[in-house]
Amino acid sequence: MDIFGLTLDSTFVWIGIAVIFAIIEAVTLGLTTIWFTIGSIVAALVSYVGGGITAQVIAFLIVSIILLYFTKPIAEKKLKIGHTKTNVDALIGQIAVVTEDINPHSTGLVKADSQIWTAIADKRDQRLEKGTEVKILKVEGVKLIVTSVHDE
Image (cartoon, rainbow, N blue to C red; front, top):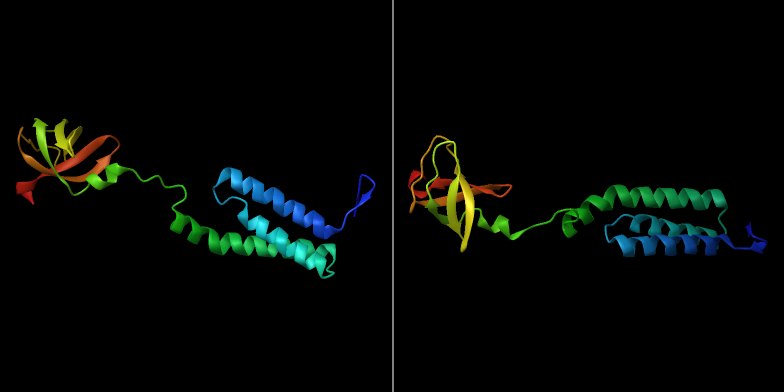
């Protein structure tokens, strides 16, 4: 392959492409190009053993697509890519105390884990008075959905 008057072996071109994909992967840290890095390395190996450009491109595409299709979902699940877990998830199931009445179809305040949170009753027409112990059922935005401990 001639580029700017220089003769380059396609093995080195594929290695260069693999390095570029690896750099992109290192910068993004999102499992976006690692599959193409591996595909480029396989294409470089095909080139090294004497495969033609068509075989190299086919090897690159097949390996990249197979890895992308079969391993990306597994890697994302194991590494939890794209999921930001917060400590608020730990509140679910905890007991809190109402610090400001929760009126029907309205919000009030509860104290959970040493913090004050806006809360609403899971049964929207329910009134929960100050001092009532409640269980946190779920979190919607910045609001806790609670139920009286005595209703369970």
